[in-house]
Image (cartoon, rainbow, N blue to C red; front, side):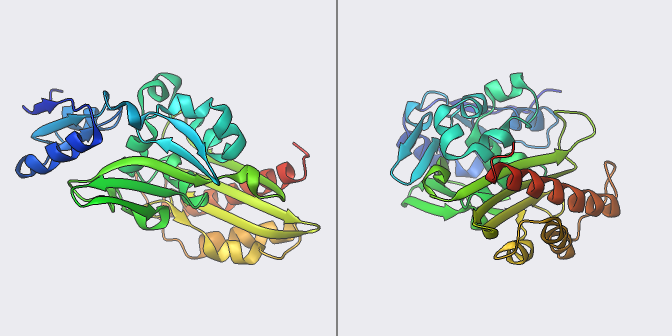
Length: 294
Protein backbone atom coordinates (compact mmCIF):
# COMPACT_ATOMS: atom_id res chain seq x y z
CA UNK A 1 0.00 0.00 0.00
CA UNK A 2 2.88 2.36 -0.71
CA UNK A 3 3.54 4.14 -3.99
CA UNK A 4 6.79 3.69 -5.93
CA UNK A 5 9.36 6.52 -5.62
CA UNK A 6 8.53 9.79 -7.36
CA UNK A 7 9.72 13.38 -7.55
CA UNK A 8 7.41 16.16 -6.38
CA UNK A 9 6.91 19.80 -7.38
CA UNK A 10 4.49 22.49 -6.22
CA UNK A 11 4.33 25.24 -8.88
CA UNK A 12 2.81 28.63 -8.17
CA UNK A 13 1.49 29.38 -11.67
CA UNK A 14 -0.15 27.56 -14.58
CA UNK A 15 2.82 28.38 -16.79
CA UNK A 16 5.22 26.81 -14.30
CA UNK A 17 3.07 23.70 -14.05
CA UNK A 18 3.02 23.27 -17.83
CA UNK A 19 6.80 23.71 -17.96
CA UNK A 20 7.24 20.98 -15.36
CA UNK A 21 5.02 18.56 -17.29
CA UNK A 22 7.02 19.16 -20.45
CA UNK A 23 10.41 19.03 -18.72
CA UNK A 24 9.73 15.66 -17.08
CA UNK A 25 7.88 14.00 -19.96
CA UNK A 26 10.23 11.00 -19.95
CA UNK A 27 9.04 9.87 -16.49
CA UNK A 28 5.32 10.18 -17.26
CA UNK A 29 4.46 13.01 -14.85
CA UNK A 30 0.96 13.35 -13.45
CA UNK A 31 -0.96 16.31 -12.14
CA UNK A 32 -2.09 16.11 -8.51
CA UNK A 33 -5.35 17.94 -7.83
CA UNK A 34 -7.43 16.66 -4.90
CA UNK A 35 -5.69 13.30 -4.92
CA UNK A 36 -8.85 11.32 -4.14
CA UNK A 37 -8.44 9.16 -7.24
CA UNK A 38 -4.74 9.33 -8.09
CA UNK A 39 -3.27 8.56 -4.65
CA UNK A 40 -5.16 5.24 -4.22
CA UNK A 41 -4.08 4.23 -7.73
CA UNK A 42 -0.48 5.00 -6.83
CA UNK A 43 -0.70 3.12 -3.54
CA UNK A 44 -1.92 0.05 -5.42
CA UNK A 45 0.77 0.72 -8.05
CA UNK A 46 -1.83 0.91 -10.78
CA UNK A 47 -0.37 4.34 -11.58
CA UNK A 48 3.38 4.90 -11.34
CA UNK A 49 4.21 8.49 -12.30
CA UNK A 50 7.84 9.47 -11.89
CA UNK A 51 6.96 13.08 -11.07
CA UNK A 52 3.92 14.65 -9.39
CA UNK A 53 2.98 18.24 -10.17
CA UNK A 54 0.82 19.45 -7.27
CA UNK A 55 -1.55 22.30 -8.25
CA UNK A 56 -2.62 23.28 -4.73
CA UNK A 57 -0.75 26.63 -4.74
CA UNK A 58 -2.12 27.91 -8.06
CA UNK A 59 -4.77 30.27 -6.74
CA UNK A 60 -6.13 31.21 -10.17
CA UNK A 61 -7.44 27.66 -10.61
CA UNK A 62 -9.78 27.85 -7.60
CA UNK A 63 -12.67 30.15 -8.44
CA UNK A 64 -16.35 30.22 -9.39
CA UNK A 65 -17.58 33.17 -11.42
CA UNK A 66 -20.27 34.25 -13.85
CA UNK A 67 -18.81 35.45 -17.14
CA UNK A 68 -21.52 36.79 -19.43
CA UNK A 69 -23.53 33.79 -20.62
CA UNK A 70 -21.22 31.27 -18.96
CA UNK A 71 -20.60 29.84 -15.51
CA UNK A 72 -16.85 29.38 -15.11
CA UNK A 73 -15.40 26.97 -12.55
CA UNK A 74 -11.68 26.70 -11.93
CA UNK A 75 -10.36 23.16 -12.23
CA UNK A 76 -8.99 23.16 -8.67
CA UNK A 77 -12.26 24.27 -7.08
CA UNK A 78 -13.28 21.77 -4.41
CA UNK A 79 -16.39 19.76 -5.15
CA UNK A 80 -18.00 20.84 -1.87
CA UNK A 81 -17.56 24.51 -2.85
CA UNK A 82 -19.39 23.88 -6.12
CA UNK A 83 -22.08 21.84 -4.38
CA UNK A 84 -22.96 24.75 -2.07
CA UNK A 85 -22.22 27.68 -4.41
CA UNK A 86 -25.07 30.21 -4.92
CA UNK A 87 -23.77 30.90 -8.43
CA UNK A 88 -23.91 27.22 -9.36
CA UNK A 89 -27.37 26.83 -7.80
CA UNK A 90 -28.55 29.68 -10.01
CA UNK A 91 -26.74 28.96 -13.27
CA UNK A 92 -26.23 25.16 -13.31
CA UNK A 93 -28.23 23.41 -10.55
CA UNK A 94 -27.83 20.07 -12.34
CA UNK A 95 -24.11 20.16 -11.54
CA UNK A 96 -24.73 20.82 -7.85
CA UNK A 97 -27.20 17.93 -7.69
CA UNK A 98 -24.73 15.60 -9.39
CA UNK A 99 -21.94 16.51 -6.99
CA UNK A 100 -24.21 15.83 -4.03
CA UNK A 101 -24.32 12.20 -5.14
CA UNK A 102 -20.55 11.85 -5.55
CA UNK A 103 -18.97 9.82 -2.75
CA UNK A 104 -19.21 11.35 0.76
CA UNK A 105 -18.62 14.85 2.23
CA UNK A 106 -15.00 14.22 3.31
CA UNK A 107 -14.17 13.17 -0.25
CA UNK A 108 -15.96 16.18 -1.73
CA UNK A 109 -14.12 18.49 0.68
CA UNK A 110 -10.81 17.43 -0.89
CA UNK A 111 -11.75 16.30 -4.39
CA UNK A 112 -11.70 18.88 -7.16
CA UNK A 113 -14.08 19.35 -10.06
CA UNK A 114 -11.32 19.38 -12.65
CA UNK A 115 -9.60 16.36 -11.16
CA UNK A 116 -12.82 14.34 -11.23
CA UNK A 117 -13.58 15.20 -14.85
CA UNK A 118 -9.99 14.67 -16.04
CA UNK A 119 -9.90 11.28 -14.28
CA UNK A 120 -12.79 10.28 -16.60
CA UNK A 121 -14.11 7.39 -14.54
CA UNK A 122 -16.97 5.80 -16.55
CA UNK A 123 -19.15 5.73 -13.41
CA UNK A 124 -18.47 9.31 -12.27
CA UNK A 125 -21.28 11.84 -12.02
CA UNK A 126 -19.52 15.04 -13.05
CA UNK A 127 -18.54 14.05 -16.61
CA UNK A 128 -22.17 13.15 -17.35
CA UNK A 129 -23.45 16.41 -15.89
CA UNK A 130 -20.98 18.51 -17.88
CA UNK A 131 -21.84 16.54 -21.01
CA UNK A 132 -25.59 17.13 -20.58
CA UNK A 133 -24.93 20.82 -19.94
CA UNK A 134 -22.97 21.20 -23.21
CA UNK A 135 -19.94 22.24 -21.20
CA UNK A 136 -16.51 23.18 -22.48
CA UNK A 137 -13.15 22.34 -20.95
CA UNK A 138 -10.26 24.80 -21.18
CA UNK A 139 -6.76 23.32 -21.39
CA UNK A 140 -3.36 25.02 -21.34
CA UNK A 141 -0.19 23.49 -22.76
CA UNK A 142 3.14 24.54 -24.29
CA UNK A 143 1.30 25.60 -27.47
CA UNK A 144 -1.16 27.83 -25.63
CA UNK A 145 -4.82 27.58 -24.64
CA UNK A 146 -7.52 25.55 -26.33
CA UNK A 147 -11.20 24.90 -25.59
CA UNK A 148 -12.58 21.37 -25.91
CA UNK A 149 -16.26 20.50 -26.05
CA UNK A 150 -17.28 17.99 -23.40
CA UNK A 151 -18.44 15.62 -26.14
CA UNK A 152 -14.89 15.59 -27.54
CA UNK A 153 -13.09 15.61 -24.19
CA UNK A 154 -14.17 12.16 -22.97
CA UNK A 155 -12.37 9.51 -25.03
CA UNK A 156 -12.89 6.32 -23.01
CA UNK A 157 -12.33 4.77 -19.57
CA UNK A 158 -9.90 7.05 -17.74
CA UNK A 159 -8.97 8.65 -21.08
CA UNK A 160 -9.48 12.24 -22.24
CA UNK A 161 -8.42 14.56 -25.04
CA UNK A 162 -5.81 16.19 -22.78
CA UNK A 163 -2.25 15.84 -24.04
CA UNK A 164 0.38 14.62 -21.59
CA UNK A 165 1.80 18.15 -21.28
CA UNK A 166 -1.55 19.91 -21.00
CA UNK A 167 -3.37 21.11 -17.90
CA UNK A 168 -7.12 21.41 -17.44
CA UNK A 169 -7.67 24.92 -16.08
CA UNK A 170 -11.41 25.60 -16.09
CA UNK A 171 -14.86 24.31 -16.92
CA UNK A 172 -17.28 26.58 -18.79
CA UNK A 173 -21.03 25.89 -18.70
CA UNK A 174 -23.84 27.79 -20.44
CA UNK A 175 -25.94 29.58 -17.84
CA UNK A 176 -29.34 27.92 -17.44
CA UNK A 177 -30.82 30.98 -15.70
CA UNK A 178 -30.60 32.93 -18.98
CA UNK A 179 -32.63 30.52 -21.09
CA UNK A 180 -35.84 32.52 -20.66
CA UNK A 181 -38.11 29.45 -20.81
CA UNK A 182 -39.46 27.01 -18.27
CA UNK A 183 -36.73 24.49 -17.64
CA UNK A 184 -36.13 21.62 -15.28
CA UNK A 185 -33.23 19.35 -14.43
CA UNK A 186 -32.48 16.10 -12.60
CA UNK A 187 -29.56 13.84 -11.79
CA UNK A 188 -30.55 10.41 -10.52
CA UNK A 189 -28.54 7.25 -10.07
CA UNK A 190 -28.60 3.72 -8.73
CA UNK A 191 -25.82 2.58 -6.41
CA UNK A 192 -25.84 -0.38 -4.05
CA UNK A 193 -24.84 1.85 -1.14
CA UNK A 194 -25.29 5.63 -1.08
CA UNK A 195 -21.99 7.26 -1.90
CA UNK A 196 -20.62 4.26 -3.76
CA UNK A 197 -19.89 4.43 -7.46
CA UNK A 198 -23.11 4.41 -9.43
CA UNK A 199 -24.13 1.34 -11.40
CA UNK A 200 -26.15 3.65 -13.68
CA UNK A 201 -26.60 7.42 -13.58
CA UNK A 202 -28.70 9.82 -15.66
CA UNK A 203 -28.44 13.59 -16.13
CA UNK A 204 -31.50 15.23 -17.66
CA UNK A 205 -32.44 18.74 -18.78
CA UNK A 206 -35.85 19.69 -20.17
CA UNK A 207 -37.12 23.00 -21.55
CA UNK A 208 -40.87 23.50 -22.03
CA UNK A 209 -42.61 25.78 -24.51
CA UNK A 210 -46.31 25.78 -23.75
CA UNK A 211 -47.54 22.19 -23.82
CA UNK A 212 -44.50 20.88 -25.73
CA UNK A 213 -40.90 20.01 -24.99
CA UNK A 214 -38.77 22.63 -26.69
CA UNK A 215 -35.43 20.95 -25.95
CA UNK A 216 -34.09 18.00 -23.97
CA UNK A 217 -30.61 16.83 -23.02
CA UNK A 218 -29.76 13.42 -21.58
CA UNK A 219 -26.43 11.93 -20.55
CA UNK A 220 -25.88 8.47 -19.07
CA UNK A 221 -23.16 6.75 -17.07
CA UNK A 222 -22.64 3.03 -16.59
CA UNK A 223 -23.82 1.98 -20.06
CA UNK A 224 -20.67 2.67 -22.11
CA UNK A 225 -16.90 3.08 -21.66
CA UNK A 226 -17.52 6.72 -20.84
CA UNK A 227 -20.45 9.05 -20.18
CA UNK A 228 -22.61 9.35 -23.31
CA UNK A 229 -25.32 11.63 -24.66
CA UNK A 230 -28.58 9.91 -25.57
CA UNK A 231 -29.20 11.86 -28.78
CA UNK A 232 -31.87 9.46 -30.05
CA UNK A 233 -33.89 10.00 -26.87
CA UNK A 234 -33.45 13.76 -27.15
CA UNK A 235 -34.89 13.66 -30.67
CA UNK A 236 -37.89 11.65 -29.43
CA UNK A 237 -38.61 14.29 -26.80
CA UNK A 238 -38.12 17.43 -28.89
CA UNK A 239 -41.54 18.73 -29.91
CA UNK A 240 -43.39 16.06 -27.97
CA UNK A 241 -45.91 16.57 -25.17
CA UNK A 242 -44.28 16.09 -21.76
CA UNK A 243 -46.39 13.06 -20.91
CA UNK A 244 -45.73 9.47 -19.80
CA UNK A 245 -45.86 8.16 -23.38
CA UNK A 246 -43.08 10.48 -24.53
CA UNK A 247 -41.00 9.70 -21.45
CA UNK A 248 -41.38 5.95 -21.99
CA UNK A 249 -40.46 6.26 -25.67
CA UNK A 250 -37.41 8.34 -24.78
CA UNK A 251 -36.29 5.75 -22.22
CA UNK A 252 -36.48 3.02 -24.86
CA UNK A 253 -34.53 5.15 -27.33
CA UNK A 254 -31.90 5.99 -24.70
CA UNK A 255 -30.98 2.35 -24.11
CA UNK A 256 -31.44 1.13 -27.67
CA UNK A 257 -28.02 2.28 -28.80
CA UNK A 258 -26.07 1.23 -25.72
CA UNK A 259 -24.05 -1.93 -25.14
CA UNK A 260 -23.06 -1.99 -21.47
CA UNK A 261 -20.59 -4.57 -20.28
CA UNK A 262 -21.26 -6.78 -17.31
CA UNK A 263 -18.99 -6.93 -14.28
CA UNK A 264 -19.04 -7.97 -10.62
CA UNK A 265 -21.42 -5.11 -9.84
CA UNK A 266 -24.11 -5.73 -12.46
CA UNK A 267 -24.70 -7.72 -15.61
CA UNK A 268 -25.19 -6.01 -18.96
CA UNK A 269 -28.90 -6.84 -18.81
CA UNK A 270 -29.22 -5.35 -15.33
CA UNK A 271 -27.52 -2.15 -16.44
CA UNK A 272 -29.87 -1.84 -19.40
CA UNK A 273 -32.97 -2.33 -17.24
CA UNK A 274 -31.67 0.17 -14.69
CA UNK A 275 -30.83 2.71 -17.38
CA UNK A 276 -34.33 2.52 -18.82
CA UNK A 277 -35.88 2.98 -15.37
CA UNK A 278 -33.62 5.84 -14.32
CA UNK A 279 -34.06 7.72 -17.60
CA UNK A 280 -37.80 7.72 -16.87
CA UNK A 281 -37.22 8.88 -13.30
CA UNK A 282 -34.85 11.66 -14.38
CA UNK A 283 -37.22 12.92 -17.06
CA UNK A 284 -40.24 12.78 -14.76
CA UNK A 285 -38.40 14.85 -12.16
CA UNK A 286 -37.03 17.33 -14.70
CA UNK A 287 -40.47 17.86 -16.23
CA UNK A 288 -42.04 18.30 -12.78
CA UNK A 289 -39.45 20.93 -11.92
CA UNK A 290 -40.02 22.71 -15.21
CA UNK A 291 -43.68 22.90 -14.26
CA UNK A 292 -42.78 24.12 -10.76
CA UNK A 293 -44.47 21.08 -9.28
CA UNK A 294 -41.47 20.09 -7.10
